[in-house]
Image (tube, rainbow, N blue to C red; front, side, top):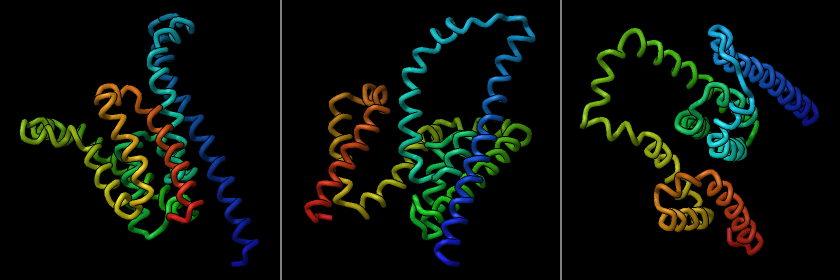
Length: 229
């Protein structure tokens, strides 16, 4: 395949992914909003937009910065297709990101490349299908006897910390493979954690994440200019 043909195919793929992503995102938004709006219409409940925004202002203040930061930080790994699909299906932090990173590592491809984006779409898609199957089985077949087992005092602490465990397993190899680049974000976040405490750190985590991204890029740029990488 010539370079010109490859570029054309890549551009066509990008256009199709974004077209399908916009269409499916609009469909998903309509479906999501139809539930509260349909319920309000059925029961004859009036909607006051200003009151709704006032009630939701606290949540918007917390989750809007988080949503912006997540899209900026996750896009490099998930790519356009994976980002669209994972945003619709949800569980990005505790499921879609770990499975995508694992898939890219198994396939031997780098995040942010064309092959990495294809693997991301496959990983997120398979993860979503498996999640749906497990949820269906949980509702109709195994939910009644599995819940008491998961809530057992011996097992519950482990299941309460699945997300930190997943990110720990993903983060440690990245730190070992990029020791110099890892020093700055580790020190920055560790200092803030001890200064703000766990509660304060969780409250401002979206702002901390984007600050850490900027500082890490700056530190990497300085080390690159000094030929330290």
